[in-house]
Length: 447
Image (cartoon, rainbow, N blue to C red; front, side, top):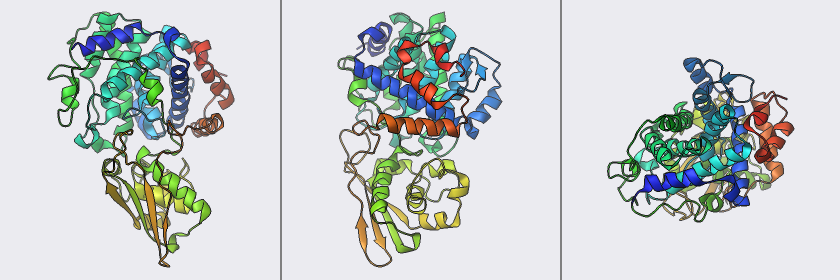
């Protein structure tokens, strides 16, 4: 079954005019949220070090709306790393699609002078390619050690950039195949600068793959479905479907799965527990010395991602249930203000983290890869009283429980303030809400 070529045929043929309104709305939200997290993350050490090492010359693509520019490949790489640096970006189809797709599309579209409608079509092409590949393996790649954002992201970014460059089916096939050989990213690097680097590298790989394919660079036309190809290589147990014909857009994956927007700047595995804990604390405020034990009940797959049990840095804290629970009690929230080194190292925070335990289960939700049907937190107080949060089935901001426009704008404004953006949040938000009516250069213009 020619999966690579069939998927490339879809990429080559998709257009803005054929997209349903729901798909356009999801893509627009992906741009809004990712550009916000990219600007907020731009001051993080990871993209700053990457920019220092790459030392890109000025170019035709913006670096996180600061007025600085770089050539598109380097801009996609740096911006993708910035967008994922705070782990505040959206979630869908086993990974973080927008943090790869948006930086790649934005960088290439600025150089090409693409219309916003073309950028949206490119985003949908990338999302559909990502989703088409992710469903084919019944097993989750994360326990094997693969970071889905890094492996699916490279191919999806190639699809998006191939669409943006209007490559035909033959050249889009080469782009997907070439990107597949650049896929990578290890779960072992969670909680370090290398996790956001996975996203940036995937954006860069996809952009370069499309350019090289356009120039005539060759790859195997069956690189995705071959027995030694992409799907087989990243499959944990080999139970991967390499035979079913590709069917992106029939119906649209992006309409079915949409995006989950994060309320908290941390690994998505802590979000449902945070929602439950913060709700309980609103009803029953507690002090750390009243608490004997906090037991967070989550799936074993989600727990695997939360590898840091006594974090000392903000990066480590993003992958720590212990810190999430301690922050919720001590600060009454879990925002960018709490995810910093000084707060995490406070003696009272460190002490409360030692009272937190994670209880795992395999009560998997068939609709969410690796997640339990619900997450719940149990508290045992020093008085002997026992409390339980509600059973949280979906985090606030999940595709099934979306943020309101006002809530999305609050996050947007908070992120732009954190990144000390040079453009007013109201101005940029309005541009993004009307992306299909603008060009890429109008979007990134100053003022």
